Image 1 (cartoon, rainbow, N blue to C red):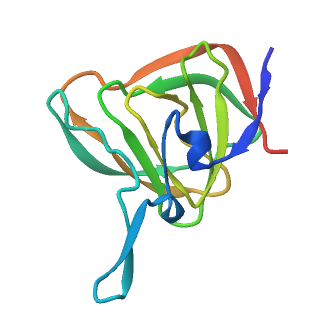
Image 2: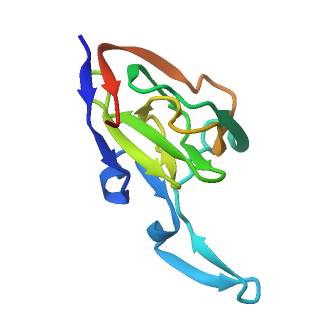
Image 3: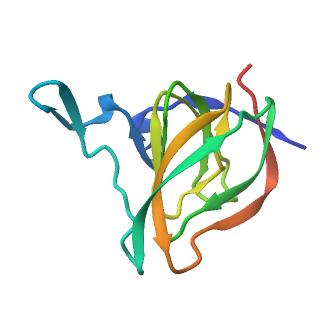
Length: 161
């Protein structure tokens, strides 16, 4: 039997145990750059990719929307580095994370925000809600196994209604 997964707004405080929220309002510092024509929102996420023969990789993910209600039956983690996703354009997507696969997961609704999963954080792959969306991904490339997947003993249902 499935359990309903409650969806929370994505906030820096709520997501802090799992990583960083990437948005201008989360910047500790910001400053004018480029002769005052732009603002730099500085150091928004702790990108962690360099250890164990790793390097930082920049990729694009094109994610198709998922139908709701959506069944959350698995999680993955990246034990060798962090993984950041920043939508390129308007996007709503669900972020599902858990302290470990036996713990109840938490779900957050992201709206025009990016996220950075800390190294080893259990999470569900992208759950885009409205339209095909491109995401900038910053994560680790290099040697070693950097993706663990697990089926959940308890299936969860994600629904926004």
